[in-house]
Image (cartoon, rainbow, N blue to C red; front, side):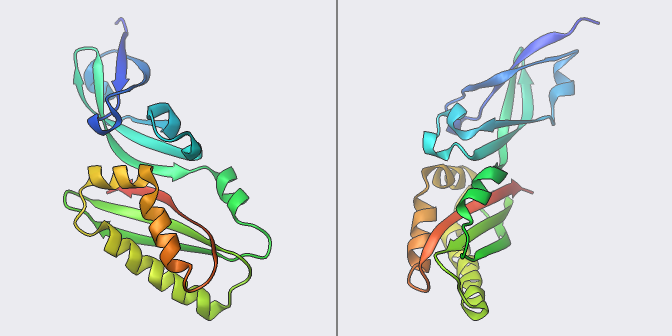
Amino acid sequence: MVKQWFEIIAPKHFKEKLLGETAANEGGSLIGRVVDVSAPEVGADPSKYYMKLFFRIDTVNGSKALTKWVGHDCTRDFISRIVAYRSVRIDTDDLIELKDCKVMVKSITVTFGRASGKTAKTIRRDVKSLIAESLKGMSSDEFVAALMDGKMQYEIKDKLHKIFPMRCFEFRKTQIL
C-alpha cells in the first residue's frame, strides 16, 4: 500500500498554521496522534521560546489533518534557569473546570530569597485560589489565548508579590482531560 502525505494544520485560534507533514496509509490512522511544536512556531511571542504546545489530530479532510490544542509544557532548561540559588520553588497542581472541558493546571512559583515554610504554604494556597478565580467561566480557547498572552501570569505574580517578593510565576504544564 502506498503512503500519502498529510499536512497537519493548527486550530483556528492559532490561525490554522501548518504544523508539519506526516505520512500514513490512510487518514483514519492519523486520528489521535499528538504533535508537539514550540510556541513561536505557531505565531506566539518569541519570548515564549520555552513552551512546547501539544496538538491532537482530530479530523482528516482530504490531505489535511486538523488538530485541537490539548496542552503545553515548559522545557526543563527553562525551569532550572528560573529556580535560582537561595530561592524557594513552590509547585501547585489543580484540576480546573472550564466551560467546555476540564484542565489539569500545574504551576511553578519562584521567590526572591528564602521564604519560611509557613509563607510558602500561604503562597501555595493563594496561588490555587488565584488560578481558580482567573480561569472561572473561561472556555478552552479563551484559556489558550490568556496563556499565550502572559497577562494572567503577570497579574497572579503581581498579587503574590504582596505576600513575598516573587521572581517568577508560570503555568508549568497544562493538559486537557
